[in-house]
Amino acid sequence: MLKLENLKKYYQMGETVVRALDGIDLSIGAGDFVAIMGASGSGKSTLMNILGCLDTPTGGDYILNGNNVNGLDDNQLAAIRNKHLGFVFQSFNLLPRMTAQKNVALPLMYSGNGYEIMEERAARMLDMVGLKERMCHRPAQMSGGERQRVAIARALVNDPGVLLADEPTGNLDSVTTHEIMEIFTRLNRDGQTIIMVTHENEVAAYARRVIQLRDGKIIKDHETN
Image 1: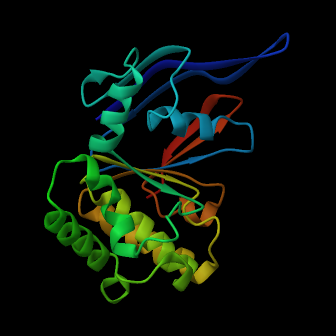
Image 2 (image 1 turned 180 degrees about the vertical axis):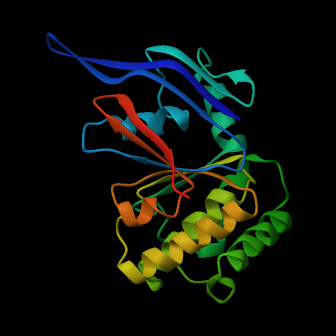
């Protein structure tokens, strides 16, 4: 499903070249659940941005579903993000004046579906994450865990091949973290491919595979169970 070959991302900072990613080789298959870990500055956020087509590499290849993403223009990258990728962020990124249902339906605005179809699918996604009774609530009326569930439902509404989660439990307490990770586990059991950045070993343990980065390189890639 996803393959990186000698992927590099360099930044010029004055006279210094920062090698954020320095020759990454990585394959992730359909149905995998991968946690990416590493200290601050290890390259994990840069890697996630490239996987999510939010940034482009300096060198190497990124193959997604058999297609080389390198060289695509902004419109083509946006189309890939909307069709193939779903995003869950630490800060939820919900629109405060919209209900949960309308927040979840947002990605469908570019799909050409009618309003009723959009609302029905958004309602179905919210039901799947246990928020059927909270569809008409706005983010300010919800707990952090509920807001993250809305974000997960929104990420899944276009049926993406890959779900990308960047520190999805970073703003949550331990009980809510467990609830959110149980949702990810259930989604993965049902076949959803998940790639997650986290700095917490307890969260990474939910994944099937853990990749550790240091100084822009993979130093360890192992199965968790």
